[in-house]
Every structure is written in C-alpha cells, then in structure tokens.
Image 1 (cartoon, each protein chain N blue to C red):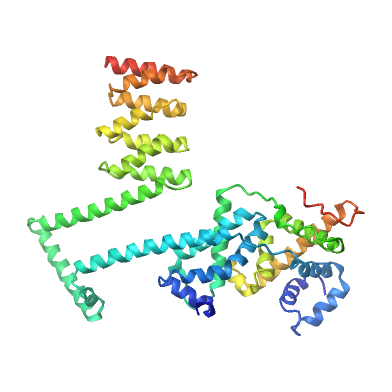
Image 2: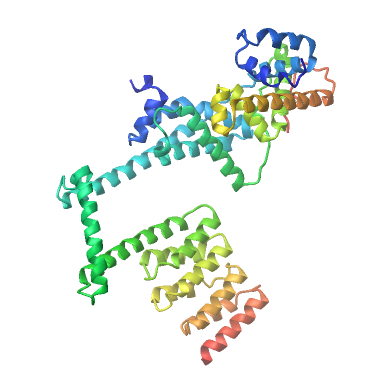
Length: 194
Length: 273
C-alpha cells in the first residue's frame, strides 16, 4: 500500500519519525541516484558510498524537509552537497571504470557501441559542473525550473548552462573522433582496456 | 538566427520537441547549422549510455543504517517515557496554553523586578540557586563528554584532533574519556592527534591509570616525535617507575639517535632528581 504513496507523502512520514517509509524511497531512488553518481564520477564504489551518504543525510536532516515541496529536488540538492563534501575530502580523480563502459556487443552493433564509448569518454572529459548539468537535465528527468531551484539561479541561466555544456560535449566528442585511430576490425572496443 | 540566440531555445526544444512555440524556429535553425544539429544529435545519443545496476550490498547497507536509526530512536523514546513518568503527566500541557504563557511572562517580569531589588539589598540564602547551577553544570559536562567521545571516533584526523582539544574542557578525569584518550595516544594513525592526546592526558597526571598508560605508550613502534614527548612528560611527572621501561626502550635496536639521547637524559633526570 505504501508503494502507491507519493514521494512527498512518504517523506512527510519519515520527517515525523516513521523511518521505515524511507525504505520505499530508497527502493525508488537508489538506482537513479546511483546512476547519477556513476555518470558524474565514473566510479562505482564511490557512487555506492555517496548513495548511502545521501540517505543517511535524509534521515539526519529530515526536519529540514519542507512538507509540500518536491522531494526529488530536495534529495538531489542533498546529493549535490554530499558530492561537494566528498570532493573536498579527497583529491579529485577522474577515472572511468571499465565496468561502466558498454560491454562488447556482437559485430553488427559494434559501431554503435564504439560511439557510445566515445560519447562516455567525451562526457568524462568535461569539467564536473558541466557534466552535472547534463546528467541532471538528461538522465534524472528534472525540469529546468527544478534544477534552477537546486543551483539557486534562474531557469534561463540553467538553459544557457545546458546549451554551453552540450557545446563543450560536442567539441570534446569531435576531438576524440578526429584522434580515433582508423579501425578495420568491426569487433572489439578500444576503450575496454585502460 | 545565430547560434547565440539559440542558447535558450534549444534547451527548451530538448525537453519538449513537440511544443509548437519553438519547434518550427529550432528545426529551421538546425537545418542550416551543422554544429547545433550535431549538439542535438549528441543530446539524443546520451540516452544510449547504459544504466548500471547497483549491487545488492547497497540495500543491505541501507537496511543496516535504518535499523541502527530505529533502535536509536526507540531508545530515545523510552528515555522520554521514563522522564514523563517522573513528571506529573499533563502538567507541561498547561504551558502550551496562551493564557498560561501570558501569565507566566507576567510572573517572570514580576520575579525579575523582585530579583533586581533583592540584588540591591544584602544577599539572602543562595542555596537553591547554587544547587540549580550545579545541576546545570553537571548536565553540561556530561554533554561535553559525549561530544568528546564521539569525536574521537571520527574518520578524519582533524575531527579527532578537535575532539582531543574539546577534551581539555572536561575538568574532571572521566574514566571513559581517559581510556579513550589513552587509546588514541597509542593507536591513532595521526601523529598530531597522538601528541594532542598526550597534552590532554598530562592534566590528569595524578591519576595512576593515566601515569601507567603514558609509561606503556613508550613503544619502539611510535614515531620519534611522540617518543620524545612521552619521555619529556614522564620526566615532568617525576615518574620514577618509568625508569625500567625507558631503559628497556633505549635498548631497542635501530632507535633514532636523538630519541636515544633523550632517553638517556630522561633516565638521568629521573634517577637523580
């Protein structure tokens, strides 16, 4: 029954002390949050830690949730803070794990896989704030208005950020494409081995 | 239309390509401009990046955390209940009523005036007040102890260091804090934290447990800085019983020469003084 409740209602109960409702929210958001962090950091173990941290913070700061406001926006705000704190603690290290890259596909799909791997690489080449805006707007199904609230700016500013991040992504992608060694072999993935 | 004017339009189109307000404009621009077309193509391609499945251990970790929270909360509620039994039930509800609050405020004002007047006059029996203040002090020091103990458990060295420096505020030698500090002195990974713990412990140097702990901490595996600080502390405390331990320590092969010298000096001081 609890599964049909809206996020906001669940969080309202968590706020009032019914901790087990957080389990439902965890089921709903562990995967999106995990993927948000994986795309942002390229590191699976770190992403798992960060997801734990987010839910820990939700419990700890549950009183700061304002009933009636979007739970998702609030949660991603916490998620961003968790990432910022984590970066402050350790030196930034961007390394793409092989497991996050697409696996080698049968020959007919190899071309597409190549492109995806290249795109992933290009995404990881961007500064994290640009990558973040793309991940938030493209993968987390957040509206510009919601992202604006999170970043503390106007929706129009978010649109400009998205546009510029996309432009940088395009340039990174084109640069990678130009430097890609010519390939006869349809199978295999240049980026599997790192 | 230039690409710059496109800055705000394209993102709108990205979120809803069917919206008639900008659809025509955007599609016309893209037909002319290869770069914006490519940007849009990449945006579409982004969804082909694969999603990753979190490992099952993530759920297990979450459940463990939630359990810990629920247990802590349960304890908390139980405590509250006990307190409530002690106080007359429903009594505090009175304080919530506006009339009562108003009355109380007036009473406080009156009391304030009375107190102000009595301050002018020679002091009366301050017993009750002193007791209250003592109780508040007691509570405050318990809170401090808890803070210190939890900070010594922190992951980051700077938090632990802060914990040690807070411990300086705890005047009485609390057994739990003493053992936590002694443990820190021996096993903390950071030299700074170990040195700070030693400083904090020095204040309790008339406690036999502390003296023994400091003697025991003089180990060959310690860093030279801590070793020297330990020897100095033992000399300051006139800890004669430490002489044997320092002698044994001095025999350690490969001991840092400066430390060796200091140990010799320490033995001299302690046997002579």
